Length: 221
Image 1 (cartoon, rainbow, N blue to C red):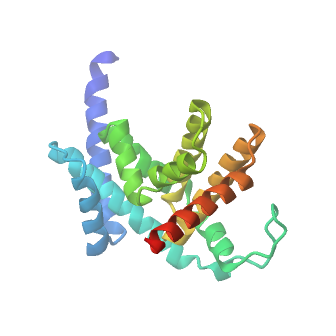
Image 2 (image 1 turned 120 degrees about the vertical axis):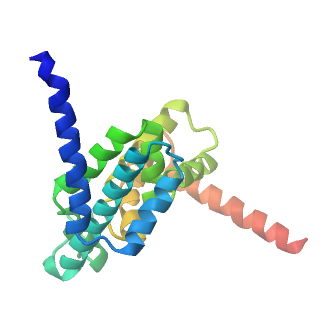
């Protein structure tokens, strides 16, 4: 049985590679999306041509699938209703997020599987950051500024929330939606801080007051 394992694995990999390239053709990847995928992957400085092509095509197929699902499922396809958490009436952004979140899970899985098969964990994170314009690092810096004495445990938990947000956000079409997904996990982070005995509103208010005072002092100089 073991004698045939490697040949079968090679056959599977060959078929998978062919399938990736055929998907790229079938879904009608635009030149703009193809160039974006190439630009993102260029940041990895991959020397393996096969891996580079596989990653580029996987990203291009995913971006195209997200675009096509978004375009064919406008906010108007979601009926009026309320946000079950806030009780507020669903707005257009809420509806669009609901519509886009219904994209088949295999679209996300196909991309993540391809990235993990061809890249190191650090390289996968770079690609996810490209999708979300570095919002994990940017948001984490914000929390550290607002809460200067953030503990190692709090930082780890917040970073965990933000990484969940990042991976979830890649299946949405535009930055308004991506930012809204991050808001979900920022709320979780802030609730965690409150549960740790901190007062998030007071911390944020003190931070914004400090920024305004520093800005006013600079203008007087």
